[in-house]
Image 1 (spheres, one colour):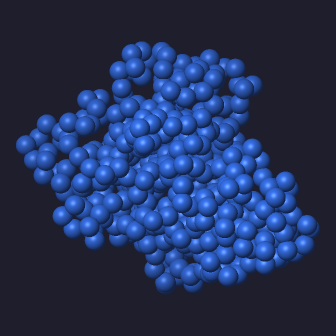
Image 2 (image 1 turned 60 degrees about the vertical axis):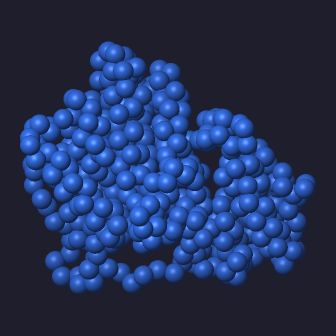
Image 3 (image 1 turned 180 degrees about the vertical axis):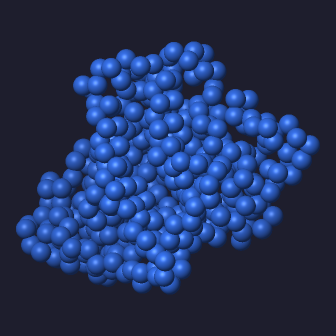
Length: 434
């Protein structure tokens, strides 16, 4: 979204797109900030930037960021709406993984397996090689929305996208959607969850290109930043959002090559959970995920506390979104825990648990996480992140933060008092007492 600030996009170390790219924070080359004593300071040392460029506000009030950017290029977008199980979508590992209600005509044909393998190869190509790759599935829809593209340097035939009219309409759609979902929208909240999901999913899918004839294959050439921010006004729509960063492992047969089957498992785990018996008993009651399932491919990160750190083959950023009324109906919390369990149970081809980590700026606090560790089958999310996932990274973060303070004349206790909160006191600053 274009409406947030650069500082807001940078501080949580989670944003990025495309397997060849690291997080936004990894491209910061200088941070200017006001420290806990009110003094303007700068950080540009590469080691210190691994903390300063992704410090969650704990360093101070950031006033300027210097980024290293590529020259402007132009994206050639080819958005498609395709069958959820085939074409350029994310096919399942087995065709039987497709819920019966989503099985299209191809499913019963003799060459179904051949079609699935062709779809898998195309998915792998796009996930591995395309500059930008993203997939959406709106709840209960037969089709997925695929948005993967590559840039070119030539500006000829480039257009503004979205256009001014489209921007206004998108903003209006987001505002209407946000208004519907507030606690004041009694009428919308009286609609059973299943029908809320049908309404939102149908309109959400219809609003994405191609908008009128879904079988069209449009090509849109626009400046690369416009392609990255293809949808405007979404900040007007309040949602509940659970997102995890899943490492893409190496193939068991060739660890130097990425194994994208883990993405297929994660994607279809979510879809099948939507159609689990406990959520499909009645069309008049339950539907925890009332908006969308979304997945982006991105690279790793060198930031100390980045969820993508160490992911040499890239990261699958996958999320499920719903509306606040799903939480008010007591449907969301249980679903969020179940999807977290599924994603955190993912393993590579050798049976080793993947280091799956939550997006810092999305929902995770209050969940239980993790496979069995030191005899503990389940851990509170905070304890799991502190004692397992970031066990070595948090002391490293504290050491570098202390190093910056020693150079610039402030101490960790001052930072804690001025800029921390209860969460960071527990996760980060408890280390200062050791």
